[in-house]
Amino acid sequence: QVQLQESGPGLVKPSETLSLTCTVSSGSVSSSNYYWSWIRQPPGQGLEWIGYIYYSGSTNSSPSLKSRVTISIDTSRNKFSLNLRSVTAADTAVYYCARGVAVAGVHFDSWGQGTLVTVSS
Amino acid sequence: DIQMTQSPSSLSASIGDRVTITCRSSQSIDTYLNWYRQKPGKAPEFLIYAASTLQSGVPSRFSGSGSGTDFTLTITSLQPEDFATYFCQQSYTTLWTFGQGTKVEVK
Image 1 (cartoon, rainbow over the protein chains, first blue to last red):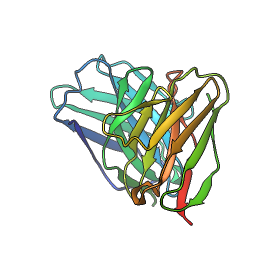
Image 2 (tube, chains in turn brown, green):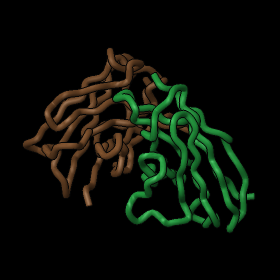
Image 3 (cartoon, helix red, strand yellow):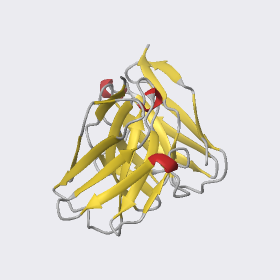
Image 4 (cartoon, each protein chain N blue to C red):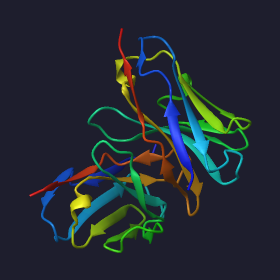
């Protein structure tokens, strides 16, 4: 059973860059048919898909965040990462990494536990 | 973007009740619709894909139906662990979107 674990700072100052890493165990980020994804959830609100990186390195992200998002993959360390630039208080959320599986569409079958990132000075 | 709208936003139910949650998309998504359950303070759990196919290990009291723009998640005989928030998610396009969630509370 694949496991995912987010790591990174819990507090980021406004206008700075939010950086998170997802470590994958009992599975490989180099496997085909998986979309390694970031999803966030502001306190008390719903889920927002941020973006994904495919094992090949191709990426895609939500149009509302696209200009600020970079997602990268490190196959040698079995990790993938999120950078979100120029953050504001609206970016305060629990950030999840998840594995998207391409079977009859794409669904997220495995999730990290989530990490709360607060944007505040 | 394809917008996903769930109804109701919340509902109250008792153990053993039958519960139905609806998810509507802003355009046809065929059956590219998934369902998740999120218990308080936890990450979402994957339940159903392709509108009606249960993930392995998911109890048979969960079922999904629908195609096009209208979808339903049904829980027959609600259990204590089912008091949670449920989300739908479309993957018809590669710009994936979630519904706003439906919270199932104790009556």
